[in-house]
Image 1: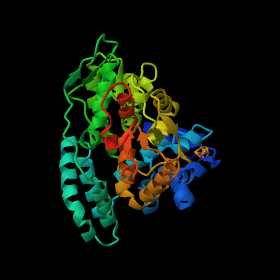
Image 2 (image 1 turned 45 degrees about the horizontal axis):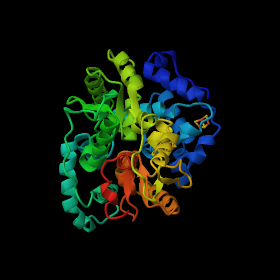
Image 3 (image 1 turned 90 degrees about the vertical axis):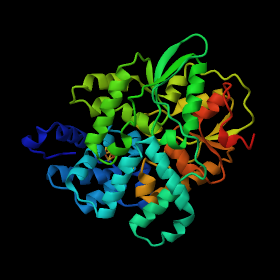
Image 4 (image 1 turned 135 degrees about the vertical axis):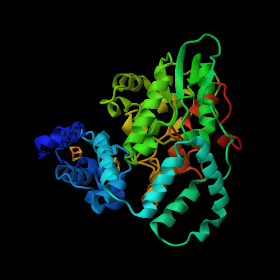
Length: 429
Ligand code: SF4
Ligand code: SF4
């Protein structure tokens, strides 16, 4: 694609990167067919190619974001399905990240929108605040019917209440802990404990630590490490995202580690991008090293996992989180591991399409998210599974509550290696 940035514009390293990405797009449109928002809405401006044109026009003309760009870029899930499909290797992720920062810096959102985004940015990255908010949401859930009306704010508030779990798990605080391996030590890793995950899915970290230590791996969770920054990064809050990245790079660099293990693939995609995010920062070198050491739990387990139990006859529908299959290009390892554990693994039709979770997307874009959820659940349930497994807490929350238990794949692997049966399965099998 031809671009027309001036020399002055290209002197800005961020614009220079955007220019390179734009020029790599040959506007063939192959990406449209695999874009969930284009498939759902049928509007070219809700396709990757349409968004690329909008971003190009906005950046080239060096103008503030307008309503049209914000509407269509906000609707993008950052699922990165387009990157898997694109034959020209267009780095849509870095382009849309840049566009989101430009929107945040140049566009004044309506008051209700600003308020909600501020609340989400101040609560979600902090497990204790999130637990408190979910506790309040649970109390408010029976009164959701009072939020009648079709303003966007009310629809978003209803979506938030719907996400509150029926039962709150026990609080988990892993910061500053070290978990010794069972038997001979074969490696030492840091675990990114996650923020939402510690609040709503603590059993995932418990199973990860249980499995890794049983396989001879020491697991540390440095007190100084925290949220990976993905939530604010996807809101275009660049400085907050950089601060989160710097804090984690510093905390992990102080440890002697073989790997940084991430069991929430949405976070893993961002940690693997720290090297790029901090490329112009004094910590850039360290950040690149940390990104190179970051591994999804399925990648890390691939060579060392050994089940010790005989699996019950169970069909596991594997839902591939976008951040794992598109963001990190990891498709086979989770399925290989689940089969090795003894389960029958099935996959839904259109496995490349997002379930609609996508960070805060299911709150900010409740209708599109609900439509994608329904489609994903229908295709998963068409395979008659006993359980749905995924590698990302966001997807598990999005797909819960429709009659089929949802578990993180590491919980199933840990169970078959002598760990506890996943709580979601305790009334069955
Ligand atoms: S598939 Fe790639 S090159 Fe083709 S329009 Fe989409 S982003 Fe551009
Ligand atoms: S990231 Fe996903 S939703 Fe956004 S343009 Fe690409 S395929 Fe479409």
